[in-house]
Amino acid sequence: MIDAANARNPWDFYQDLIASDAHPGPLDIRQASTLDLGLAAIDRTLYTSPNVHLLEVVKVWQRVWQFACREEEIAETGDIHVYEISDLSILVVRSADNEIKAFYNSCTHRGTKLCSDNTHLKQIRCPFHGFSWKLDGSLDHVPARWDFPQLTEQSHHLQEIKVGRWGGFVFINPDPDAIPLEEYLEDLPAHMDACGFEDMYIAGYYRKVLTSNWKASIETFLEAFHVTETHPQTVSFADDVHTQYDVFPERRHTSRFLQPVGVPSAALETAPTQQQIVDRMFELTVRPPMPAPPIPEEMSARAFMVAGLRGQMAAQGQDASAMSDAELIDAIQYSLFPNMVLFRSIGFPVVYRFRPDRNDPDSSLFDMLILKSIPAGQPRPYPAEPVEMGDMRYADVPELAEWLRDIYDQDVANLGLQQQGLKAGRTPITFSHYQEIRLRHFHQTLHSYLEQP
Ligand code: FES
Ligand SMILES: [Fe+2]
Image (cartoon, rainbow, N blue to C red; front, side, top):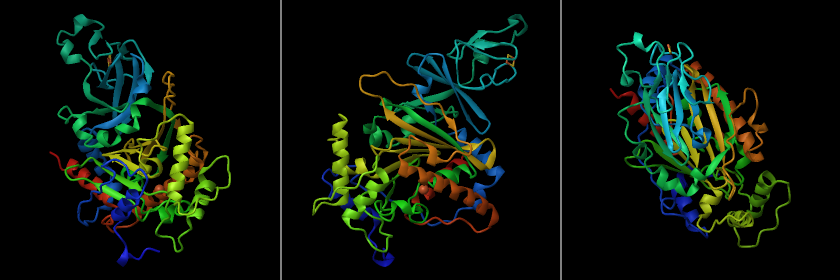
């Protein structure tokens, strides 16, 4: 068990580990970046108060860039995606071949909602009196035009919202004065462009209603501190204790962690042998099941597993020579304020999005998108539609590797308990200085938005 007094910094451990890898990785991975964000406590009513929720709608959700859909969900001109968050409803429209526009989903006559579901249209038409618009939002038809002398093309154009695109993700921002998406994304594109998200499609899409505030929901995925207690099945081959957490100077929307895999958790009383680590990884991750081969003496479990992954990729015709060992095996995960989580790990192209569930501070929507590369030389497959999970467990999600499925069910169980407990007690919430720094960073950014005039 790690002795706190003698513990090495997690980032030193992680940096030493990847320095000893055969392929140590690009510069940004070979660096750690932490800040002293203080130790302030967090008011627990932030997670439970309906008033805080209403404030967040105005100060956060109407001001931030947020992931609305993937480009392949609106692949054809006339495809429309209805993106909703709280009471905001936004039409994301493929208005021309390479053009995407977004509008408030609200008639400029008397306000009626224009589209209830994702759809494909030649023109957008209000179901009430029949005002209609072209796909670019310009007025197409006004019934009894003679009776609206006050109306102009400009005054009754659909109310447009900013759109940004990166990596096949379509973002919207209701704030007309918003900074450009490119600026908002900070270093995310530079760090993640090798992932090739734009050449992927949605292979699995799962939506779960969580009985927790959206902030608690995302926070549970921003730290590995809970792993020993909550996901003990992983500790023999993944090191939660020596996970590196990065927040960057002058960067308020993005943060990341890098969790080493192929090494055991420093929280274990007795460290497993290198062979035992590989045995356990085989047992959990290799399907159909097969016993692990004996690993060569002097070879680490991590190096052995990385070599195996490289061999697998080569057999599938994929060139992994430019990839570092860390990108192949570790859990490298980024977040984009306020509600998006992306993995840089090659084998785990999964994206999370968290949203409040209507106006209920005790409930949130968790969207999990499982991306896959478009097979070489083939057209982009149709994206999977979201599966509303209801009571379905992650244990029954076929696109997830078997060993990962339990992890989500374990997290969901915690979240329900956390929300109940948040309402039961009165003490402020405590974040650790290092391992929960991404949560503190998230809250400081949230606070800066809530404080905006
Ligand atoms: S409310 Fe939409 S046409 Fe009248
Ligand atoms: Fe977890």
